[in-house]
Image 1 (cartoon, rainbow, N blue to C red):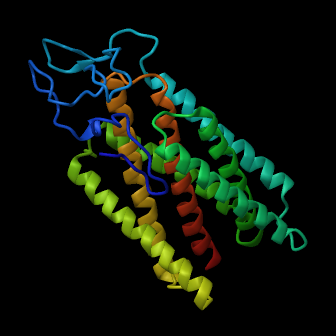
Image 2 (tube, rainbow, N blue to C red):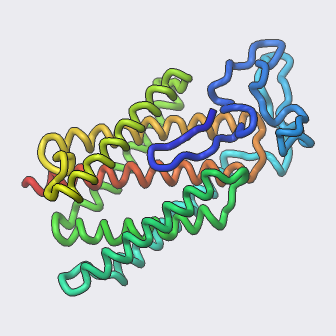
Length: 295
């Protein structure tokens, strides 16, 4: 099963043997069948020559042996910091170098839309690659930052100077809240949870596309998802979906470490977390823009 996120589809750590996080948990005395894609040597598994995971005979849980080639939480944090840092840096540069005043708004918007399309292409290429490509992930982050910088500057200039800071703080709060809830096991990621989130996300994206088509060909606000009470409701739903995908991302990281995923897989974790946080920020920015615009 592939793990996905609300913006782009991406492969999980157990790409050739199913998503480890949604297999049955290992039982005492024997691991669950197929639960660890890195533990056995098969032609389909590119990591077959290195049995990363070991079985704890006392507790029956997968244990990663000491190895420089195994993914750790430090690897995930470092790669995520690099990816998000690239987004923030290019967003700050585009904010400073691409003014959104009346004389330059069209040019800046054109560059931002072009950057968003390039970021989309890079993200889709990485999503279907069998291995993580740091260059692709960082390139995606750079172009996504250009888009976010122009959009954020526009909101700050024409709606409310404090909206961007509020959106950043709101995104950080959602991340911290989901992380705490996940660590406390208030959120349990199961197959049912995964299926519900994916179905809701597909419906959400479909409504976004329909709304865009109505706004392009019919003019105005399309179906009304960008203003008023319906826009507020749509924004809240978008943020909740982003929070759900954060839980899926945390599960993926947890399983990757538990089952001894190779270190390069930490780039996939960073990629997924970056995509999800960008999604949450954009939804938060849109929601706050509606609220502050109504003041």
